[in-house]
Amino acid sequence: MAPHADLDLLSQSEQTPIQEHQKAFSFEDLEDLGDHHLPGFENRSHLQYTPVEELHDLLCVGFGPASLAIAVALHDAIDGTDASLDVPGLNDRLPKVAFLERQHQFAWHAGMLLPGARMQITFMKDMATMRNPKSDFTFMNYLFKHDRLAEFMNLNTFLPSRVEYEDYMRWCASWFDEVVHYGEEVVKVTPEKSASSNGAITTFNVLSREVDTGKLRSRRTKHVVIATGGRPNIPKPFPSNHPRVVHSSQFQHVSCKVLDKPQHPYNIAVVGNGQSAAEIFDFLHSNYPNARTRLLIKQGALRPSDDSPFVNEIFNPGRVDSTYSRAPALRSTSIKEDKGTNYGVVRINLLEHIYETLYTQRVRYGNTSEAEEQWPHRILPYRLVTDVQQSPAIKDGIRLTVQDQSPLYLSDLPNTQERQEILDVDAVFVATGYHRDLHETLLKNARHLMPGGDLEDAKWQVQRDYKVHFADKKVSKDAGVWLQGCCETSHGLSDTLLSILATRGGQIVKSIFEKGEGADGSRYEELRN
Ligand SMILES: Cc1cc2nc3c(=O)[nH]c(=O)nc-3n(C[C@H](O)[C@H](O)[C@H](O)COP(=O)(O)OP(=O)(O)OC[C@H]3O[C@@H](n4cnc5c(N)ncnc54)[C@H](O)[C@@H]3O)c2cc1C
Ligand SMILES: NC(=O)c1ccc[n+]([C@@H]2O[C@H](COP(=O)([O-])OP(=O)(O)OC[C@H]3O[C@@H](n4cnc5c(N)ncnc54)[C@H](OP(=O)(O)O)[C@@H]3O)[C@@H](O)[C@H]2O)c1
Image 1: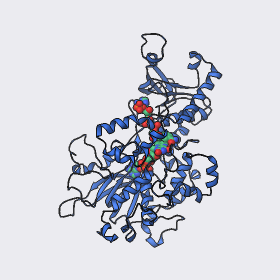
Image 2: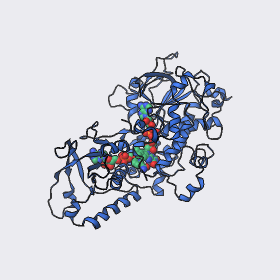
Image 3: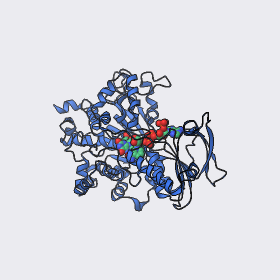
Image 4: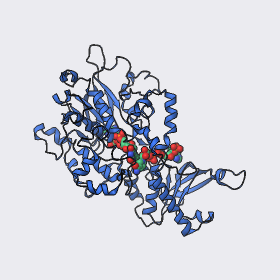
């Protein structure tokens, strides 16, 4: 299941003009068109369409923010507007690049695009500013082009709404329509039989499946970037395919169908203590006034995310070097120490808002523990769901068996025991985070090139420049695979976030194109001379 909701669920009338434009312009059309017949885009990047059958220089799997940042850096490098990206060969021979994205248009965690949700990061950490403030792709330029610069300034904030930031990224993405193939899900990346004299792999085959038709398509390339983001973590005992057990990533799309009567007195559970769980809990309170919602958290309280300035320096692009160089045990300890900047935590203003909501219930419904049992919205601490069954009490509902350790922590009496409770609910929203391991599946056919790849639990490792570390001499220097967004254990907590994307996109472009060889055999280095 995708962390991004499938935007098939959006009705035509809900689509923006850009989305409609993107849909109208499919790669099928491109295959029938020569380059000179391409439709004129309002904003067109320097990257140009490459026919499917041609050997590519670079194929990027997934077109989320990480790949978008690479596209932007490539454009800037060709444009010559970024002194840090001096790869002149790119101008002499445009690289043959394509991005394969399974969604039908650009969308950023659309299942969690809740009204009022704000960015967790300053807009200056956009797709370009940190690398090249003069780029076309800065958030400031987006505001300028949309004639909102002055009004945005009047908001007096560094944190735009998520809706606006997604619109910004969609606008950036629209520049690359010619090279992005939407509605294609990559299923595997396979090294091709070597044509080189020393037997080293020089090309990869990327197999994708058209989401609508199931049709398979192969492309060949020298370089692959895998930037597929996270996939939902649905922990046991929750079933992964139950219509009323819904991961947070699907919330916006499924909740309105499962809970289709906003005035109905639904019983709803939310599980998790991160930002997603808190946003969903708050949304339910605001939009289902007669519902009873229960937020089940493992710990004793919701905790605030630490975005204080000294701590926030771990998200500076320059910190990746020292994180990568650190001894592995020390690195893992420091990542754990800093986890409270991002995982299982809630932004303080939302946390305070939820506290106020619960306080209002004290006033309205009573302050005693008996009254609290009846509050419509409650946070239940020290709770762990141990079993999920069909509910005998609610039609189509779910029965949760919950281990309640709160007496051990909160009882006034000594020697209390934990207990079990039963919750019957119409739906449960599981906001339990993400796994970032799809590359392990996609690269299955390449495991024989991995050092120790015959060991079942061996995992892919990357170099500082995110290039996959293959066994010695197995893969040519002019070919390779790069991983994005799944390197937190080696590159630190900024890896899964937006924080360093502008800089990292530039690093990927340099790593691939500065020393590499073009798909037609010409060396980028030579082209420069
Ligand atoms: C609700 C939410 C809000 C967030 N807000 C912030 C924030 O404010 N600030 C911040 O720094 N971080 C935030 N994050 C963290 C988030 O990880 C980053 O913002 C960002 O999305 C990372 O980009 P990415 O490209 O690595 O991954 P993704 O955004 O997940 O993009 C991956 C893309 O790959 C596609 N894909 C996956 N598998 C395949 C396949 N097999 N074939 C083809 N395409 C595929 C997906 O459809 C997706 O479009 C948020 C996360 C969530 C869940
Ligand atoms: N507005 C926004 O910008 C916005 C909105 C939502 C999310 N985000 C971002 O998205 C990323 C993911 O956030 P997230 O909240 O989805 O996930 P998360 O931060 O990984 O939180 C998942 C939570 O689920 C808990 N959990 C895991 N397994 C559980 C189980 N079996 N039972 C009960 N609880 C369990 C975890 O607790 P343990 O850690 O103790 O296991 C953790 O508290 C973060 O980077 C976040 O900042 C941003």
